[in-house]
Image 1 (tube, rainbow, N blue to C red):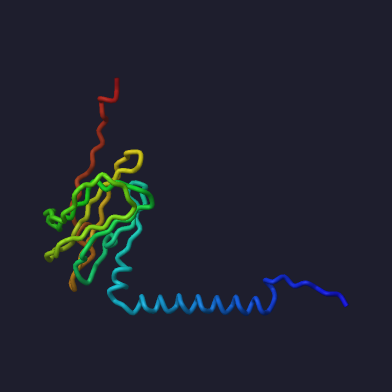
Image 2: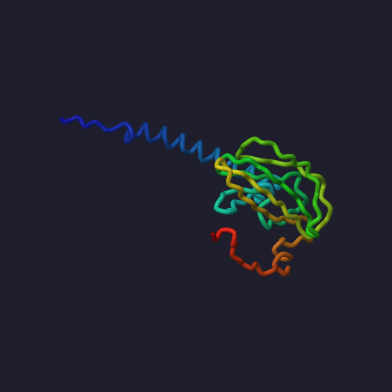
Length: 177
């Protein structure tokens, strides 16, 4: 009689223990997902995240661009794929009035920036403008918009109706010599 060696990966005991571990993992993940979905505040916060690109730079924002929230956010967040230096963070209402959020420039680099904001008054929408410097000193600017309230409309509802001036390209004659 010939003895055949079965690799450990194919033995019934190993497969049973692996399937038990896999089942435990799936149950844990399912439980966590259920817990996340059951909390409206957590779900609303999850829905506020957004991945966008500003000048080729990947940035995640909270609230998401064009988000409509049930209530005003307590903070704004930016997350970059690599180390950046945040040099500008401004909040404006729909009339372009600045809201003092207390941002002060600090010459440090990071990937995650969070700024608490004061209680916001009712407005059609709000705009967050930001600018960062990368490790090479390249400046990248971006913005995102959000609105909140039971009757709120997406910011693009208002922004699409605005007249935007035509940009006129003119050569920079200083470069010609």
